[in-house]
Image 1: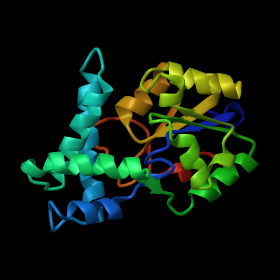
Image 2 (image 1 turned 180 degrees about the horizontal axis):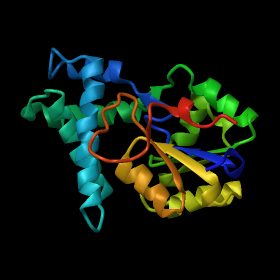
Image 3 (image 1 turned 90 degrees about the vertical axis):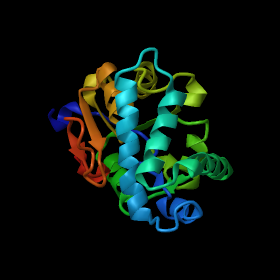
Image 4 (image 1 turned 180 degrees about the vertical axis):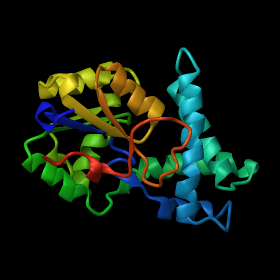
Length: 228
């Protein structure tokens, strides 16, 4: 797709713009697995993504709560958490995330690239499955001002991979799907949903180069999206 055909860049939020605080989680979960470190925890999370993808791609009707439960359990098992402690880790994860979003690490370069996208004339939007917190989180992390629209599934009442959530964002931006690109970190949630919405340019965020079970265009981060 030529640059002059691209008018909008859409992004998932968690692990695309604001990443999980793997350091804080590793410190917490060492109570269940003393040898755990943040890098191992981040790498193990890909096993959770694979479990989620397999469930979402092969299940109808889709139960997103079940999908995320399978994701978490597979992630913890891959991280070496003993089976008897996985429920405890899940309870701690939920409690910590309710106290303060765990998707809170804005990695170096994110803000600078968003500024470059805006300066290049792109319209920017967020499309996220969340619990009504994305607007406030984006404001807290200094990201909100870069976006023309922030769509939170809890607020609009529809969640990815349902293509309607992308249509809501595109309508707000007044941009057709064929003139848009979307980047997100979950194939079955982000890529499948965006493609169903007619967004041809979909890039799978694969920060650790571990997303090996699907064939799809992958990038290491938003810095690899077009800047002009």
